[in-house]
Amino acid sequence: MPKTVPDFAFETAAQARGALTVAGVDEVGRGPLAGPVTAAAVILDPARIPPGLNDSKALTLAARERLHDLILRDARVAVAHASVEEIDALNILNASHLAMSRALAQLAPDHALIDGNRLPRDLACSAEALVKGDARSLSIAAASIVAKVTRDRLMVDLAQQHPGYGWEANAGYPTPAHLKALLDLGVTPVHRRSFAPVHKILCQAISVTS
Picture 1 (spheres, rainbow, N blue to C red):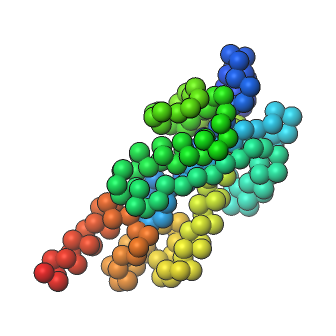
Picture 2 (cartoon, helix red, strand yellow):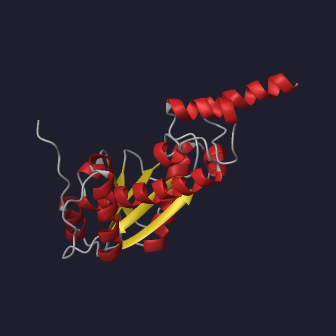
């Protein structure tokens, strides 16, 4: 079965229904144990679509970095985050939707193409959810690239503030090295306390000190 290549069909269909501006929206960072969840919204210029756009997970680091810069140059882009505190308070799905809503609010498009199977609540524009949208829609693919590069860079910065967890390489995901560092070094202020591995360590620490 051939791999899906994203195209502009969903954007064109929305424009045919009367939408002047169509934004693709994606998020990255649901699975990590540390750091925010990051969303991007992108409105592509049909005349200046960077060649090679695809789901960020299907691209090399070098390709993501190159395309990220082209997208910022040639498209309208907004990035937003939901904090660790918001993730712990709202749960990761709702926090992801909050980040998406914040990114969309900066662009105020007529229509949004949202990666996933559920839409954030109370959007100010019409929207449709596209499962595996980053492999189907060029606008969502562009958003996935911007969100991924932005969050990865943020985690490199956080790794300098909290060395030893390997975030510059694992972006906060629960790799064996990260899990071992949690046991050896403890929980930082930017770890998600509601996530099971972090919560378990915090509970163990409480039982030892009580």
